Length: 332
Image (cartoon, rainbow, N blue to C red; front, top):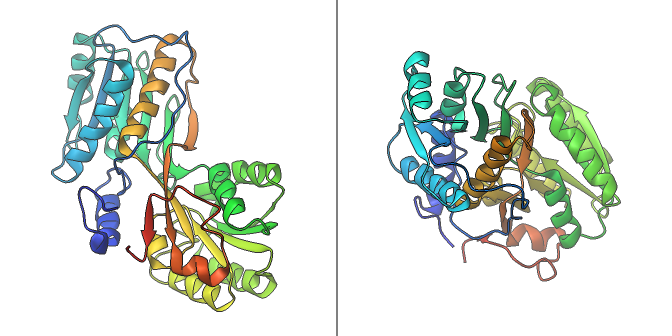
């Protein structure tokens, strides 16, 4: 299976450029993923009450946003107002436009959209989607849907592929991922596993933590999780060393970042653009009805799955038992 917009050989470059552009995480693909329907009390919005703000950038990203918007409109069963914005936003003009159209809730896409949503009048609800967990913007009074997979989904898939795993190691920067690690500890416990988390706020402490992990890990019952974290999973120095050492120690490594699977991680989960749009629409409808949370962060739950079959064979993972992979490496 290949992306609609890029070749697999250029995927890592696509990810890096997309993140630098301040847009959505680079990997929003088309596919169906089951998504729970909204409660019966959530109805289609009044005409024109929901708007989408997204970065005004060229292809292939514009098509990605178009597909997300398509998912939003599919869920609300109607057209929504859209605003393509540049790097600089005139708060007065934006708010005037929203009020003229009777907008009650804004869905903001990407970092640029989130930045624009920060100047929206407080009487307009805001739902954010397509931002990295590493983004440290002001999320007060915003419901933020993060593009980092829910640890519960990652750990469930790990248990399907490697039932023997009892302990999961992770290195993280608390400034970026303290909230995610809290979710992860609960998810691990619910699946009969222990999460052993190491804090690292710079590259030196991250490297030291990985050294300790490889010295203590037992490949028969341990695994290593790589979160989306620019400190502890730094791409140029830390990641190559971690993947090299994990291979040498026969230790299963799974990741929250799709690009790591091609480089040797066992598996990862990534978002589907249409399903992401539907999920954002559900959140907007709930805010509109007064039933949704006004603020907070939510991990990605509408996912697709990529697996590295070579790594799976090396660490003894069961790929037959865990069906439903959306992409495999090496390319089939």
